[in-house]
Length: 583
Image 1 (cartoon, rainbow, N blue to C red):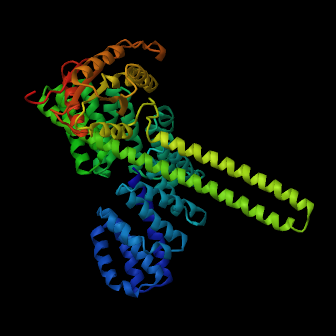
Image 2: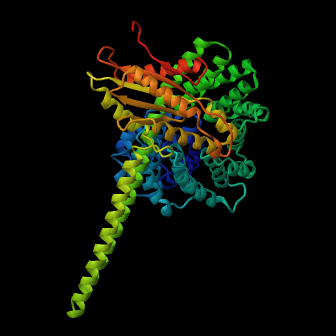
Image 3: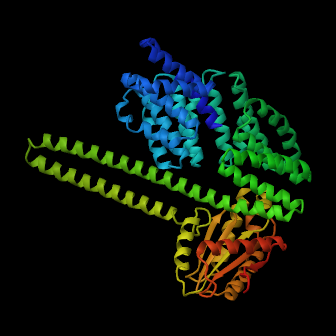
């Protein structure tokens, strides 16, 4: 939805800006630049042809014409997926662009291009600079583009609290005008952020108002997206029949408005799951395959991971185990990529946020120092009073410096801890576990075992008793398993309900005994503290590196995953061991 918002907002902004520029200098170059900007969103091939013509005339451009040309060309490169070229052509000219509206356009292209390339820190820095320009921007559509760009990036980085604060600023731009585009976008952002952050009650409560605002604005596509989010949430909550009935008409509307939207893929995947749950395998396969193919075609990594898992479940329900295994293998590869990308995004966000806060602290300290220096100059006219006040100022400076240093050290410790520990379960996160395990597996003469396990039917617990109960399960399981381990053995959360153990100096049989002990301990967990009554079980897979069967960490991870799949296929709540051919 956010790419759709940004393209339409940017169109309004660009056309208005180009027409003003053309009115100021009604020459052939200005006319061509204006036409190129207009064609960019309606007939892109004409825009590319005009940009090629303008490229020849570029040595004749004024600074303003050159800036306008570069920003249109950057948008054109972005639509064609050529983001590296897009960024490379803007960076040298950015210091020359002083006019706030045009500089904000440059920064928007840098935010979007860096985000597409996975260069999240650069995208965040450009976003922060564009936010600082907001007081200098005169038009609502200019402010709206900057704010919506921030919302889109922060949602992608899962920084939902910060994203919501910018969505509220968009809402405020149009709060007094029913039917305004800002009101439609701001409310739609609110709904999506609440859904994504798990606050479904707040999201559903705002759906009717958001639809009314977008209908008043005659924005059929954004209204359709809001309805699709609500329908998907209905299916996610287990209301399969109602969700299907609400979703099918929306799928037909997408075909007429935006056939390549990620929200269409998301809705088709939800419909496939609903049909799977209600036992209609033919329709489940039809919609699931359509969603998977659309996700692959659009190169949407998270949607590919989600739709491949749904297709694996559908094929398994159809007893097509070979096809199911193929989808599961694809899903496992994609799941690792998604988790690695999310870790990269989280670390980038935390680093930029910490650096921004640190710079703010330094600026406050410098400002305080300037005040003290000015005061010191004035006080030099006195004698005794000057000495007393200087001592006081020195003490104040020491207190400020000491407070700033303590705060900085605490923040550094917090971010170091955040980079190693899973926030929910307080065990090693994926990146830290992987780094420690790779170090253990470098000992080619030693024996290291790797155990993968995940909770059986965990989604059923979330769906039936809610996410707080699911979180309680994950924390309880980690505490239970941790109590079975030695100090040299590492427990890590790889993602969701999937965990791993790295066991240095532990052979296959010892690892199997430990895994059985953990499996039994999990099965005896009393669920009463969660407020509900249910049983727990987990499935385990084990692989082992020895001098005679050497495996590196990645090979052991893949082998243990195959063993885990065997445990799942054999009925769950069991331990399986990977044994290489011939052993």
